[in-house]
Image (cartoon, rainbow, N blue to C red):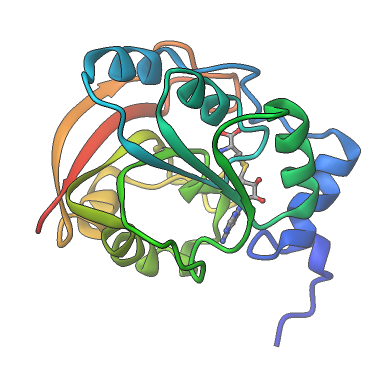
Length: 200
Ligand SMILES: C[S@@+](CC[C@H](N)C(=O)[O-])C[C@H]1O[C@@H](n2cnc3c(N)ncnc32)[C@H](O)[C@@H]1O
């Protein structure tokens, strides 16, 4: 039994609704992180891409404008309304749905992570690796910015490097790992760009 009100429980949409409704979104970058821009420029294809916990959805809109087939998803109706305002009339798909339960028609080639894993209470993490594996096509890639820290309170809930290895190692092989160059103050010095390829 959880005694906290719903708007204090980050595992629930209400928590995020309140923050979007009040405009208190210190994680919001206002644009596309440099590491994603570099990565996208280095890919010659147009991968079918999922952006879970898309928030304002700047990256989703930017990738779709490059011709990528993008699905942006968030379980907070207020976040989805914000994303809709960002995206306007765009060619992608915007869904109000839970990452753990939505059912895509076909698997994705790429899932983009930013400030999503660290938005979840740690007890939800064990399902993250399995779910990412399930959502990706064989040879698909989980790429994005991961927040490393070990202070107990959150969000953001930081992860230790060995914890992320244990979470993703059974499902993925890491192909890239480098520090972020343009982190916001809330993540500064503790954010890394990583690319994990699905083990078939
Ligand atoms: C810290 S915000 C980050 C938003 C965005 N990724 C960014 O970098 O600006 C976390 C987002 O994840 C969403 N979220 C959390 N758990 C979710 C879940 N299980 N399914 C879908 N969205 C979720 C929240 O509603 C919120 O918009």
